[in-house]
Amino acid sequence: MSESSDTKQKSDVFEQQLVNQIAREFLLEQRRNRRWGIFFKILLTLYLFSFLLIYLGQGVDSVSLGSGKHTSLIDIDGVIASDTAASADNIVTSLRAAYKDKNTAGIILRINSPGGSPVQAGYINDELYRLKEKYPEIPVYAVIGDICASGGYYIASAADKIYADKASIVGSIGVIMSSFGFVDAIDRLGVERRLFHAGESKGFMDPFSPLKEQDVEHINGMLDNIYQQFIDVVKRGRGERLVQDEKIFSGLVWSGEKALELGLVDELGSASYVAREVIGSEDIVNYTYHQNLLDRFSKRLGTELANQLRYNSLFKYN
Image (cartoon, rainbow, N blue to C red):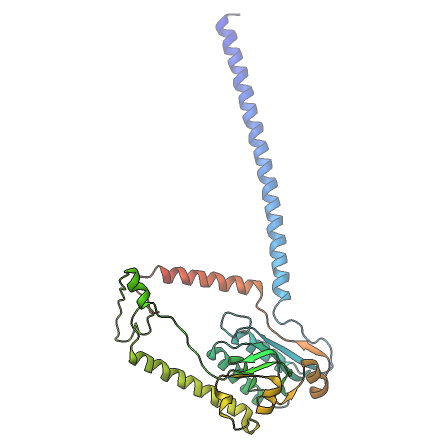
């Protein structure tokens, strides 16, 4: 055999081995890909199944499965705003569910809130009056925890009766708007303020511009209007139970014991006391609505998308 033939044979064997090696590596890679594919499919299935369980398991905390009468409890906890647990959407959803249950003997609004948005509080107050008119046989009571101030009391005033602990903080009937002024600060820093707007008062109350007397007058007028709405709501709910004392609407807060003297609350007592002694149904079912994870995720995604669209816009309405 010639040297060239021997070399060619060795080359053919090497090529064949190389092809075989590549084929084996390809098959191994394919198997690995299939295993990882199966693994991720199983993982995704378990994730979706768990997500579904969480989704179905959230919302109203509990529902009545028995045939006996019970006290329906709704918690209004924390700041009242459109993006908190104490939003009008969540509280109204809870109220409607409690009222629609034929086994509801009475409803307790357990309030522990420093207040918040007058709009959100107004939505809840309005819906309470609507539901009370629709279901006159179901009494509703507000029970104050640590604090029921401002928007929290705005809601409580619609209840048939208000209960509190002697040390609860009650009141703060008023409206507030706060801001800062940085005119002198940017002058010292040598910063030039450039504000472009269409509309004579579109840039009013800008914290980097000098405060104008007409702007202050306008804001005070708006606050007075909302303040009067608050007073009217409290008087509508409390009526002649309020004592004649101008301090009630001054924005001050009182202890539950003092609030009882002023007519801001009717009696001292806890939620369990009201359920047992007033409503007469010691069995309490919690109807407080909690947004499920899917809704929270969707809302967060929508908010992020809206923010991106807003920030990418040159001209803005806000």
